[in-house]
Amino acid sequence: MNEKDDIKEMNEIKKEKDRWRETTVKKVTDKWPLRSNSFRNLSNYEVQDLYTPDDIQDLEYQKDLGFPGEYPYTRGVQPTMYRGRLWTMRQFAGLGTALDTNKRFKYLIKNGQTGLSVAFHLPTIYGYESSNEMASGEVGKIGVAIDTLADMEDLFSGIDLSKISTSMTING
Image (cartoon, rainbow, N blue to C red):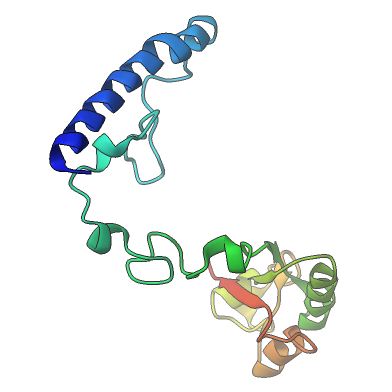
């Protein structure tokens, strides 16, 4: 395509977008109005109802989009995307001792889990051992208690970490 064809196509897309709003969308919104006039994502950016090439006229392909598996990772961290490896299925899990959670992890893996997400208990999240007086009343409520390197070894005992990815969420 040359520049003249690009301009012609952009004008056609703009006309079709207007037509789409005035016909297809209007038929539905006349019966069921939108819940809001404006929608925003978690970063507080307004989300349009439809995006077209007109929205990315200033896009520099290699700088802004790039290739899968390469910086800036806009198209994902895996070079083959979903074609080589499906998305990681990961359930947030952690309970009791490291051995208790290890049993749960093995059950999840046996039933199709492709990643592990460790739910730590609050004392671990705050950097306290379970026996610390600051942890009093919090031990055993939620998540897995990890106090030592041995606990981490027990947590993943018998799990091939070269074949399953892990995520360790520390929040609080």
